[in-house]
Length: 330
Picture 1 (cartoon, rainbow, N blue to C red):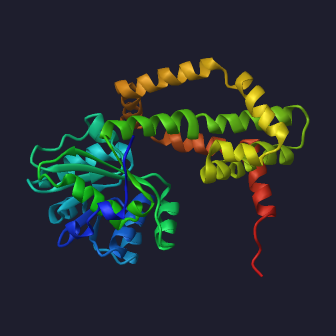
Picture 2 (cartoon, rainbow, N blue to C red):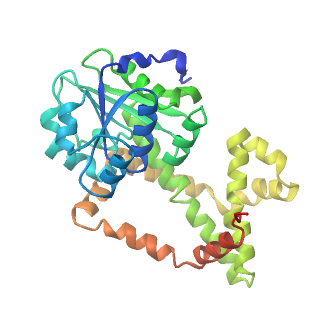
Picture 3 (tube, one colour):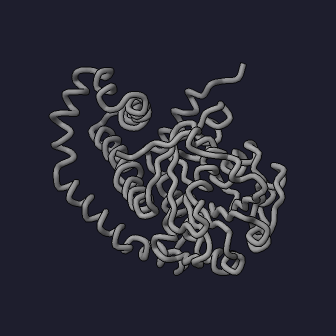
C-alpha cells in the first residue's frame, strides 16, 4: 500500500535561506513558481529572452539567463518541455551542478532515459503535480492544493526527500496528499496513461463516436453533445466518487450499455495492444522515437497535427456550440 503524505509529513523550513531557480516559465513554470513564492520561498526564473521571460518579469520575478539562474540557485527545478531538458541542461546548467545542490523536475523522462546524467555529489528529486497547471494554481489560491508525487533518484545530502516534500508543501500538494514513488514509476505510468487512455485513446473514441452518428445522418450538434460534451459530466462523477458512484447516477440504459455493449467495442485485444505500448515505453523505444523526431526538426509536426484537428467537424461544431452557450456578461 502506497503511503500518502500530508502537511504534517513535510517541513517547509527546509527551504529557508535557499534559492529555487525555476527553469522555464510556461504553464507549469508559472504555476509552480507563483505558488512557491506565495509560500515564502525565494524563487528566481531562468529563461531565454522572449514572451515567457517578459511574463515572468511582469509577474515580479527576477529573470536571468539559464546559466546565471543555475549558478545562483541551491535548487534547480527544470520545467521546460521534455525535449528541451537535455540540451538546456548540457549547455547551461551542468557546469553549475556543484556538490550540495539539488536538481529537480516534475517529470522523470530525461533522468530515466539518460538525457540528463547528474554528477554524483548532488541530490536529484522530482516534485510532480497530478493536475494541469491552471487547476494547480486555482486550487492553491482557494486554500487547498492538487495531489502530487515526490521521488528521489540521488540522495547525496541525506535530505533529498525532505527537500522534495518541502517543495511539495510550498506548492500546496501536501494539503491534498502526496505519494512517494520512483522516477521510473512516474515516467512509465505517466507516458502510458496519456498515450493509452487520457489523450491517445480518449480523443479517438470521441471522434469515432461523433463520426458514426454524423455519417448515419444525425445532426452534428446532437452528436457533439452525446459523444464529446457530456464526457466531462461523466468524468466529474468518477472524480468525485469513482466509477461505482457514476453508475448509480447515470440512467439504467447507460449502465446496461457499460456492462454489455462496452466490451463489444473495447475488446480484450485492446488490452494486449496496451501491453505492447507499455513495453515500448519501458524499453525506451518511445523516447528514442520522440526525441529523434524533435532532433530531425520535425517538432512542427505536432503543431500541424493540432491545426489539422481543428478543421475536423467535431471541433468546428464544438466551437459553435460553446459560443452559443457562453455565459453572457450582464
